[in-house]
Image 1 (cartoon, rainbow, N blue to C red):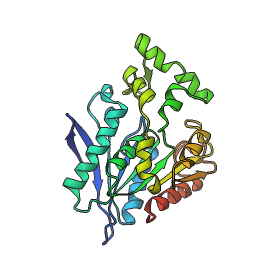
Image 2 (cartoon, rainbow, N blue to C red):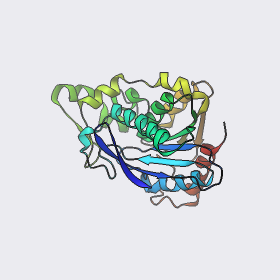
Image 3 (cartoon, rainbow, N blue to C red):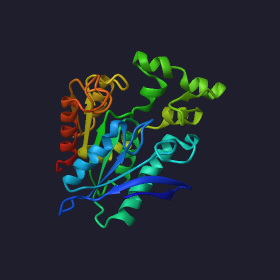
Image 4 (tube, helix red, strand yellow):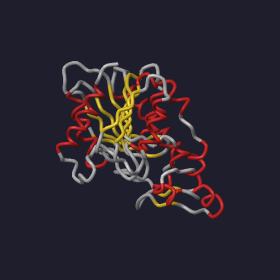
Length: 266
C-alpha cells in the first residue's frame, strides 16, 4: 500500500506491505540513506522487503524530506528531523496499521541513526535492529574525518558553515548547512545504542570507501553483545565492489545473508 501521512506538518510518502505468511512475526521499519528513497539504492529495499514479507514480517518504508516522492524542500532535511520522523512513523505503524506492536528496524548508511533512535524509543517492543554500513559516528564522519576522502569534503565544514554559511551539496535537493554541522558536532547515539545493543547486528563491507570499516568495527565491538559482520568484497551498500546493477551473484548472496540475519529470532 503506497500512501502518505502528515507528520510534523509535512506529508510523508510511505509504502506499507503485509506479511505474505499465515503467521505474522511483527513489523519492520526501513530507513534509507542520503540521496536515495524509500526503495534505497538499486531498489535494495524493494528486494529486502519481499524477503522480509516471505519470512512473516510486515514492512513500512518512507521518504525523508527532500528524498523520493517527498514534495517538501530538502531545506527541511536535518538529522533531528529524521530521528523525529522515524519515531513518529513507527508510532503510526503501531497505532494505525497493525495490531501487533512487535517492531524491528533496518537502517542503511545515514538511515542507521534514525533507526537506532526509533528503536531505543520503542525499546520495550523492539526485537531486532540491523544496520548496513551505518553513518552514526557523526563527529568522526563530518566534523573530524580521518579518511582522506572525507577530509577533502568535510575537514572545515563546521568552521566554514558557521562563519560564512557555507553549505555542502549532497544532491539536487539536499544540502548540509550550519544546522547540520551543529547536529553532527553535538549528537552522540551511544546512549540510545546502550538500550538496544543486545539486539543489534551491523553489516559492513571490506571495500566501503564512503565509511571506512576500520572506523565502524571497533565502535560496534565495544557495544555490549552487539554483533559485527564484515562481508569481504562488499562496498557501501550490499553490492560487490564494481557491481553497478546489484545483480552480480556475490551481491545477491550478500542480500540473502543480510536478510537472513534480519529475520533471525533473538
